[in-house]
Amino acid sequence: MSVRPSPYAADLPEPPGGPGPGPGEHPAPYAAGFARPAVPASRLRRLATPVGILAAVAGAFAYVGTVDPNESGHYPVCPLLQLTGVLCPGCGGLRSAHAFIHGDLGVAFSANAIATVGYVLFAAVWALLLARAWRGQPLRIALAPAWWWGVGAVLLIFTVVRNLPFGSALAP
Image 1 (cartoon, rainbow, N blue to C red):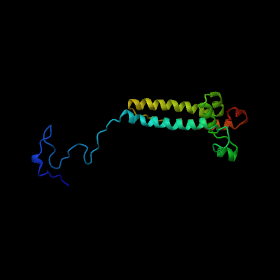
Image 2: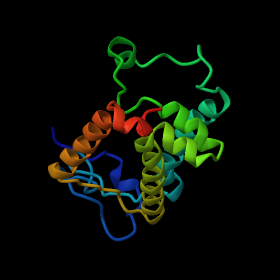
Image 3: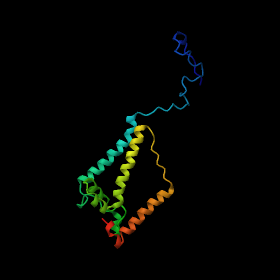
Image 4: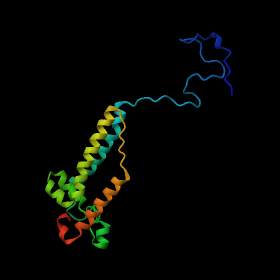
């Protein structure tokens, strides 16, 4: 499909910078089949993701801080604990979060040490995400498979030890 000039084109003033494209030429480099040039996102738009993540996490922590998980009936029971009697790596996480919110770090750590370390790690990664979004740089955390295997091994060891008699200090 070719572009035909309008019969009234002679009546229009010439655009600044010379005549426009000729017949069959595209008026701009991003028209029909060309990618638009990258437009830098505004700072407000770049900060939307970190602020949204913070809002969601703060809402969840506010709920756990308000509704005590030590009182029965507010939260579901861990299915693994209920069916097998084995504590999973997440058992005690809500109690840990509740104590963490109320500033009792000793109780938080004794309820679930892995979760308490995870809260601090999450805060550090979130701060990095916020700083990079502020500067307009993407956050790319690429972990080698060995790191993921290491995290899995730590969780497995934590789960096994907290279920043994000598690891009862790690049980909630």
